[in-house]
Amino acid sequence: MRIPRVVSILAPILSVALVPAAAFASEADLVMPDLSQVSFVGIDGWSLLFWMGLVVCSLGFVFGIVQFVQLRNLPVHRSMRDISELIYETCKTYLLTQMRFIGVLWLFIGT
Image (cartoon, rainbow, N blue to C red; front, side, top):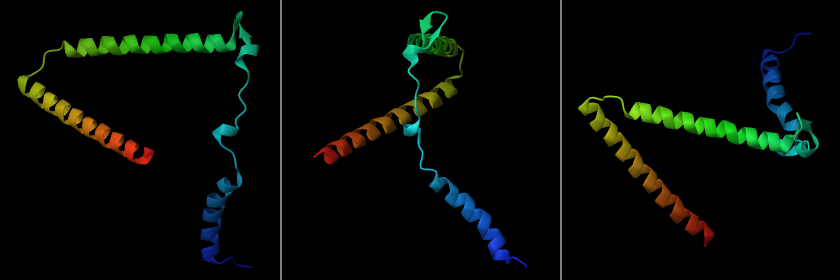
């Protein structure tokens, strides 16, 4: 028996499209372990995750500041500085306009 060409094309597409709908799961359904009950080298899991996260974020912040200062101190051509300042002012104006719009929208929705 020969399968029609349309069925052989549509069957895989429909199966791929419908299979994820059958799995009613999301990130909210994940079961997180209690980190305070686990210890590593005498430190409970929650404290280890918290303090190591702060250390990594602090190192990233310091790295960003160092890169910013080094980049700011590089010599630059006057025309490139003018273009850079124009782009900066344009972006600043855009962000202020967007913040104003979102604020008015928030007030409108709130009322």
